[in-house]
Image (cartoon, rainbow, N blue to C red; front, top):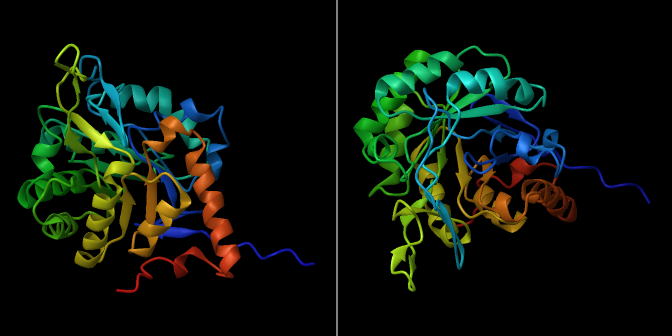
Length: 308
């Protein structure tokens, strides 16, 4: 009996050619080396790094993570080594993987966003930048830029002027009209968008009557936010002509398929990495098996195939 022809899983997002549409989500995969014991990272479509700032950041005081019934809350506070240490200590390993490396960047001001982008521009091994304008776990920057079309566009414009790299802008769910924000960053020069980031939430220890997080509030992620993320990804796809990358609560191949069907060109796996380190690999294998079972030649046949 002849072996089935393996389907083509490759996609191109913002000029970035990926062998499959499965990426890791920033803040859930460290700098890549942490997951080497679990599988060959070369199997990924792309790897998105932990957020990188101009200077090192220590993050928020502990406790910084707590589990919820359908996900988790985190208030890490964008802890990272800073751009210079990233270039010196982290990028050499990443560029050896031979897959697209997308560096998530952040700043407390427009100037900082631009300077981080400038220092990463033209560095071998970096395929694109993902601009974080949507983190709810810091006091300055992050969400304050991403909640309004004008400020979101200004960040993108500043970064666009500092680099020739493809730009992906990561959007917050905390907006009245996701289409308006998406169109604003597209017009400012973003080559793609990714969404959603976490949703603000909190949890209380009833014995101590204190927040379970040191910063009181945190960002909710995991299966609880998937229906919200799916709706917003669908709306963003309708609003812009640039590619959309979907994330938020994706744990299984069925979850990933939903995002692709509503029009996402690729997906990012986040919180699932903590409970199942091989989650991204399992989803890649699941996509392949799904297409084989249906006799579909490539994953592109699924993208945007929703029947409304």
